[in-house]
Every structure is written in structure tokens, then in C-alpha cells.
Image 1 (cartoon, rainbow, N blue to C red):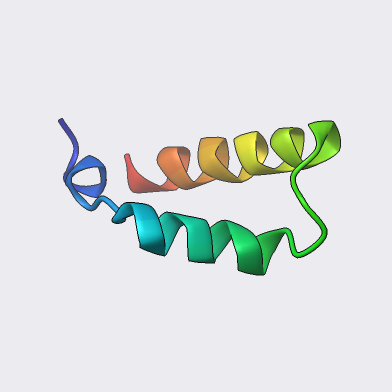
Image 2: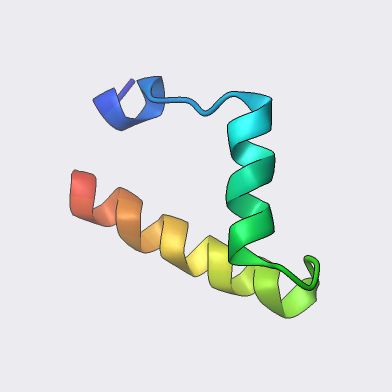
Length: 46
């Protein structure tokens, strides 16, 4: 397991993060954006 996978957010922290990222809610297009950001972040950590 990579080190970045050990850094987990608590449920409350995760909810607060998504509230800041998506103040009007979370929808289909947002899922694609988040997936791309995570894909790029994982690629940069390798």
C-alpha cells in the first residue's frame, strides 16, 4: 500500500471537504471531475 493510502480522513472531515468542494450538492459531472483529480493525484504520487 502506498503511503498516501494510509492518510485517511475522518467521516466529519470528509463531509466538510465535500461541502466546501460542492456547496450546491454533488452531481454526475462533479463525479467525473473528482475522479479525474484523484487519477492525476495518484499518478503524481507514484
